[in-house]
Amino acid sequence: MHRVRVDARRLRALLRAFAPVLDPGRARRYERGLRDLAAELDAARDAEVALANFGTLAPSASAARARLGAESRRARRALSRRMQSRAWRERLRGLRRIAAEEALVATAPRRLDRLLARTIVQERRRAARALERRPHRAHALHRLRIALKRMRYVADECFGDTPEEAAEIEGLRALQDSLGEWHDARRLRAVLRAQVPQGPRRWRKRLRERERRMLARYRRRRRRLLDLWRALA
Image (cartoon, rainbow, N blue to C red):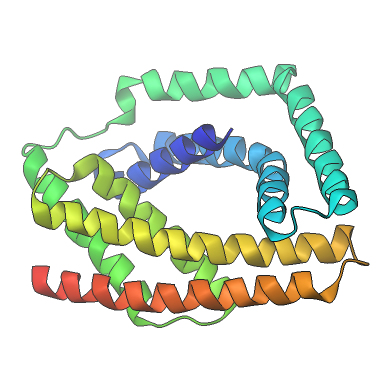
């Protein structure tokens, strides 16, 4: 489930990055289909992550863990029913059909190396602008996390094996991980508030402390990545 979501995001990032040489209509349908496919998995994956993270927060709280476990199983059963439906099969067939169409690539680039270099520069600039804004609100940090994921997915596919490129990918991964753990802690706090409202206040306190730690780590890693990008400019 996690692998499918990651691969769908990776493909969407590449579709956006290489939009200049793709057929706009086909690329838009492909991107929308991938987005909808990943969205179908969200509820089951979020419940799974909440259960795993709660296990590290309060391993001895069996009643609350049982409630979160029941929600995770319910979400998985709902997903299993959707995956067995005719609509799901039609969606997969549609995605395979678009991916196999030669017309998806509207213009074959004369120099692939130049296209890759230009794409990397554009994605790097976009991510750097997002970082330099110093977002601090939750929704802005979430958007930044998504932008960094897109940049990393493009880098994973387009970079070579130079030390500088390896350092950039590692910097993106570290920054993304910090924001991902912050997001998971924040999400678990909301889940507990909705599903285990009678839970002790110390759980929420620990989660807030985890959020603060992850944001402090993000800020340190942010400076390192920006310094690296300035050196590469």
